[in-house]
Image (cartoon, rainbow over all chains, first blue to last red; front, side, top):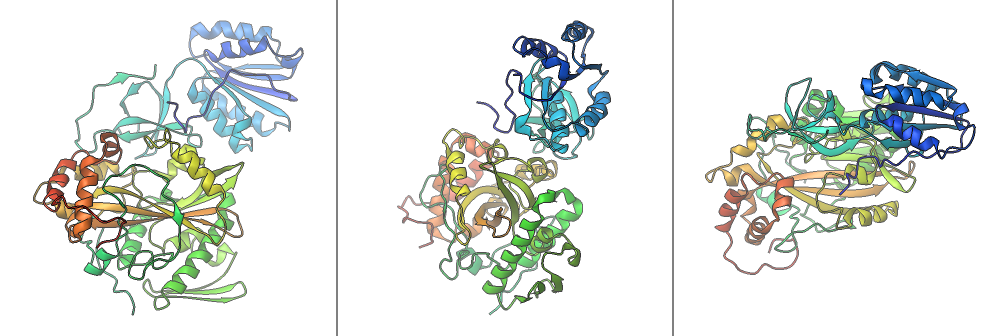
Length: 197
Length: 346
């Protein structure tokens, strides 16, 4: 059964608009390439693509994205490094700008939050999940965010508690909720499973 | 006659208890001997004198001590009270509603004097006498929602209504049963209920949302929910779960009647006049098992409900570690006799 608080991701679809802003990481590159086959002529002449390779194996996506001849193609070394630039593009975006997000849930969540802060309705954002199932997790106790969580349970990288990753997602925090798993019986922790690879 | 407010604590030495009159006015939630989710919504109208339903906003002997506990929670964690910027008008609506209800229900304790937008609010139990301008937050020591809800028992969620949904856009949550306002703020109705097992499949939330969207001003509704809590702790927040979770290991046959509490959340739903927002007051009532068994009908029924509760619900409510100890205790008060219909004590 789907997680009711988790956003619903769908294959990217070209939408009418004056400008098409993309934030993409890793295998999200393939989602953009798949979508390009159904895009109308001239679509990418108005596209601004921010791409973040997650491994050397992703470099071929850059070359293929360049062949789409977007107005702008920017390669960011990491999401954290690229977010300020993304925020500036959003802040200066005109009416009729469409936002497309593809790749990991961490990228989709953080870019969505930034777009909402810039006044964009989250329901108007195209988002397609590709690649790693790793989760961003907020510790409900200390409020710190742990990135790229692949295991259940996980350890909070801030306060050190062992957290159960709940199937509960906050768009505003752009993270799943983590709750101490051994509060009742400290130290008694179920075996770690790699659930979110 | 005024209420005799108890001096008591909801943490550390846990001196909370109910007087015999307060036991009798407890809003016992089970109207039959088994329990399953239902959209048990009914009009929130004034009920029998001497019950928790006598007034639409209930004030009882725990008021002063609960307000002190709420202030402690907020001092430790200011994120328990949050309001998104567009919710201030709804905060004023809530301030008006609570002042009107408390002043009309308990004139010995609360007085509201209105002269156009110049309002004077007197809260005798807490020693407050403030004059302010309605609509001007600079004339209050807190924002309107925080100001008035620091003077009202329970949690309060302010919901914005737009695009056919309800959005948890403000609230003050210090006595919650395991959910985090800080995490859920800004969520839609289905989103903030995501972790609840079973009820989605039963369609409970679809029906509840459809119903709530039609809520009309002046016609509040209510429902109750329940769980059980070890120790008379109001702040059973997920934020502090690593601190209170070990309590669940302390239940023994010799202390279960004193330590384990039936915890009832009386939720009401009100449409607010200026903002068209909605407020959900969520009022928490605690009853020790040793207090509960003084009403024979409640003792029999509580035994049967707890004994027969499906395991996933027991897990969700956090009862599993000590459920059998509590069932064994309650069994001594269940002679197998049939119980009368309805929630009221015989």
